[in-house]
Image (tube, rainbow, N blue to C red; front, side, top):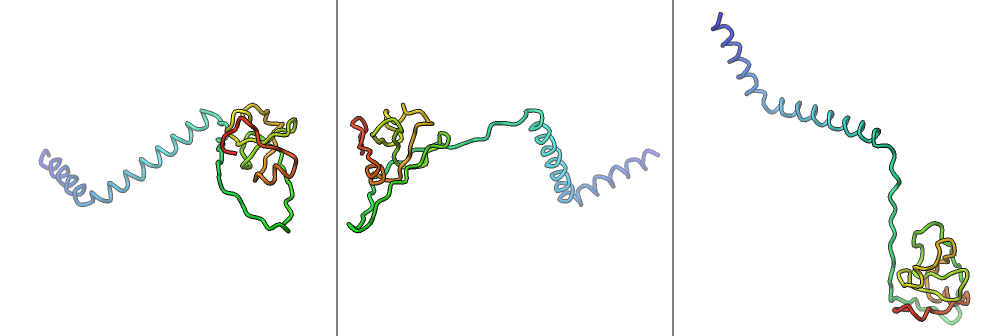
Length: 136
């Protein structure tokens, strides 16, 4: 009887050696499925998170050339929530424009910010450069 068990064990070992690659593939799929399920459950337990946003400032020394016949129209854009949407920023309560990372621009309340895509746009609306902002 002992010899029969040994032969079954030997057969099992032989089968495992012959099918080693298939077994590794099956175990890998199983582990990936278990880990994915666990991460899904964990995300439900942890609850919803606040969406990520990106804020960045743009510094540019490029100026666009316009013909004398070209009309420059100001299309200032009111800020919609803390995201930089232009190259220059001004306040509804002031006549100065700043680069987005200048000290004066950082003190403007978000709801009072007006964004400009160019210096010409800001100046066409009556804004002048801020004195404390280098680079304008």
